[in-house]
Image 1 (tube, rainbow, N blue to C red):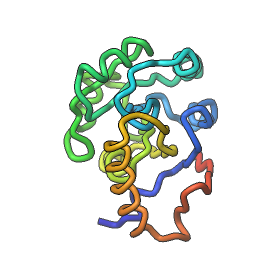
Image 2 (cartoon, helix red, strand yellow; image 1 turned 135 degrees about the vertical axis):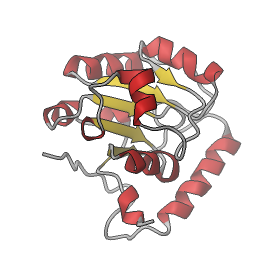
Image 3 (cartoon, one colour; image 1 turned 45 degrees about the horizontal axis):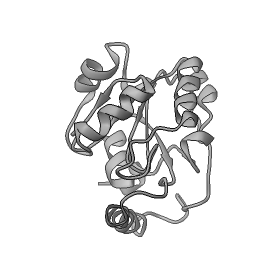
Image 4 (cartoon, one colour; image 1 turned 60 degrees about the vertical axis):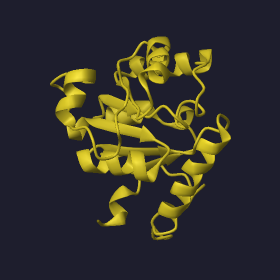
Length: 181
């Protein structure tokens, strides 16, 4: 596999820094968000008012968000309910799941690869999944906090993926807005 393909199209500090209006204007209508370390720390289901407001703002731009997580239903369901969005739990990213599942469970037939983005914190789980389905890839830095052992495991996996990426193509902390259009 060409590792350059998992390099995100846009890289931001957090989900709060993404320019959803520009993405909508460029054709993005659907947004799949990872849960763990993307919108919440590992094992934290306390959804802040700030996050609820962000998801309301995303909806107001015309983008319909949904959650796609490899974590369990008991973890993902309360987050989806608090944000008032559909979700898929036990997703087994990056290799399980396809566009028909996402259409059926999250968004409907108007969802296509060319009008959908994946927002996540992981090269291996989120960017590889997005690339496999042809989605626009938005990567954010991991949310801090949560279960230390799981956070450490995720960090080790990220570091190993990062170590094989070409430095002239992607550098941690060098944020960019690669909005297509």
